Amino acid sequence: MNNDLLPVSKKDMERRGWDELDIILVTGDAYVDHPSYCTAVISRVLEGAGFKVGVIAQPDWKNAEDFKRLGRPKLFFAVTAGNVDSMVAAFSANKNRRRTDDYSPGGKTGLRPERATIVYTNRIKQAFSDIPVVLGGIEASLRRLAHYDYWSDSVRRSVLLDSKADILVYGMGERAVLEIAKRLKENAGGKDCLSGIRGTCIIRNNLDGLDDHADIPSFEEIAKDKDKFNEAFKSIYLESDPFGGKTLAQKHDKRYVIQFRPAAPLSEKEMDGIYALPYSRRWHPSYDTHGGIPGFETVKFSITSHRGCPGECNFCTLCLHQGRIIQSRSEESVLSEIKLLSRQKDFKGTITDIGGPTANLYKASCESWNARGACKNKKCLTPAKCKSLKLGYAPTLNLWDRALKIPGVKHIFIGSGMRYDLLTERESDEYLKRLCSSHISGQLKVAPEHSDERILKLMNKPHFEVYERFTKRFSEMNRRLGKEQYLVNYFISGHPGATLEDAMNLAITLSKKHIHPEQIQDFLPLPM
Image 1: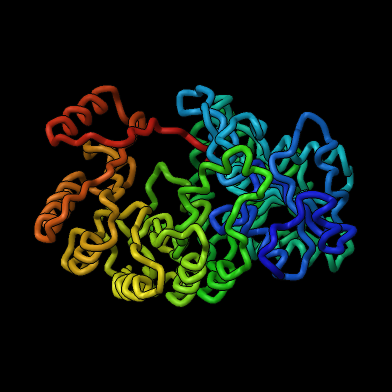
Image 2: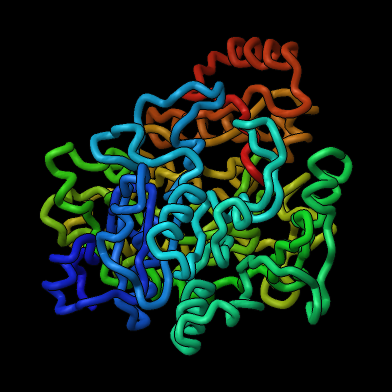
């Protein structure tokens, strides 16, 4: 392995001495070889296992020709719409066309189709009718079963059926895609070997031999009955734990979409291995003349320290994609990546973030997570933090100290959002002090989301008085440190259950408190 970009053309293959590839990844994003990009992670994981991998980024989907540029892979095509759902990339919450696409060269729009997962797979099947196609990424993951689609205002079938793909990987798919590759290699490309892989979905004509599974309401039932829709969602949610979750079966006409049990959480060693792979940490040079990839600039010198979130905010998809169980990298792994970044020619001394879905949950742990998985009958953070949840503030402070001693590193900032409710008690005193004194670049991101207690309960967010307690603490700490720093507050309008009066009351509350939020996000009902 080396940190050269993976082949995107026949010439690239020739330079490596390859006449064919094992696996070709097709993505709706521009090709950026950085661990913040799903295509980069999956391609490097496969490469690390000894497979010959190529990338087709943002192909011309008007016909099948561009999907032939790297030839026919020996094993399979892997398809992703990219780091975001292609409909979200194309449209705002008001269904207006977006003017920019941060994952495309120069921010240009229109370089990926709507419903990219379906379009790409159909074109691949046109080009190579019998090749296995594996779906993955956020678009496929959250459309794996019958789901509500905001843009058509209808319940749609599983994306597996509409795309005619052979298998779908949901969640964070490193283990699953490796298992798929190994099985297809051992079975000389036969598709019948793909049943039973954790973290995947397939289509079957019957349920013969499917043990210990749960049937959920069919596509036809949930398309016409909201109660059945809610019943299906509840089952999907409750069976999403990798320890206790069951295989699910959902009928679509005369066939069944089978969702096998979620993949087990990655160990610290596995997490370290993924982030130690030889990413080149740059976009493909063909994008230079277009001004590069805008979204890459925000993550170029950032570090992903962990995955997962136990917050279970009711408007968030993290629980059904990354899961509730925190999976953290070791301090040594994070420090090794910082050392690598510090040696880059364009590094100016600032690490812009060490974080994940929630920055202050690095190294958080619970005995139940390792033994039984996440609890079905109670929440980790609401109405208050569970006593069994242990926060990782001590190792985080140690990590920050050691990182600042690395030659060339001047600043370590935290750019990810924080759970402010975990910064209101005495156990967070030293963490908050150090955060405010050295690791905020002037602004800290928090998400109170609303001020109305009824709406906050619907959101599964803390009471507004918790946010007020935190803001007071934050102000006092900065005053004591002689710092002038601010909060970047995020709020949601139009959440289910909220009225126009609630929006007016939120506006009045913010005005009285002299809060000028950077963003008010219109609620967007994404799949799952």
